[in-house]
Image (cartoon, rainbow, N blue to C red; front, side, top):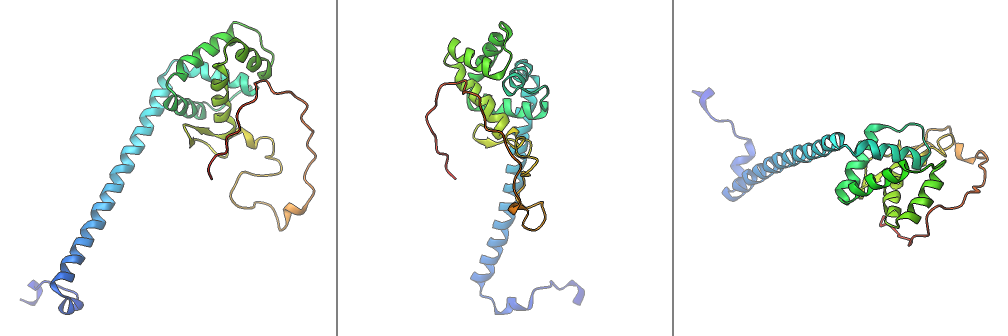
Length: 204
């Protein structure tokens, strides 16, 4: 008979009925919160996968990659990052899809030896191309699209300093490595291709 008796914690005899009901309600709330969080994670993951799959199937993605290579003066870029950046850019501004296609047609119709030449000629042709170029370059160099971080360590802004500053949140060098003289960097001599833009201070 003793085996059939329910097992209660010894403190239950000192608990009031209201306290017992409150404890049960709190346990249910934690369970419901956990289930809700798991469900939200599944929905967010599924939506992101759906956006990525849509981007891979979009016929404008190869045009975006070709534009990106010319605008960054790179022989090759990671297509996985390209798909994610393209999806973010199009999600933020849907009309960018048609603008990217038009900008690619403009690039294909001319001969541009550098990113500088293409950017300057594109803005002269259509001032709307300036925002398209800025979105593409912001994506690749800063790793941002649709006001979200798409990629961090592989952002092109780290290429210039990767021999001296590794893009991590902790030090990878020896003790006091930052006290050593950094390598010499040549002073930039190029001129900006696009017209000046309004300074925007982003919240931190």
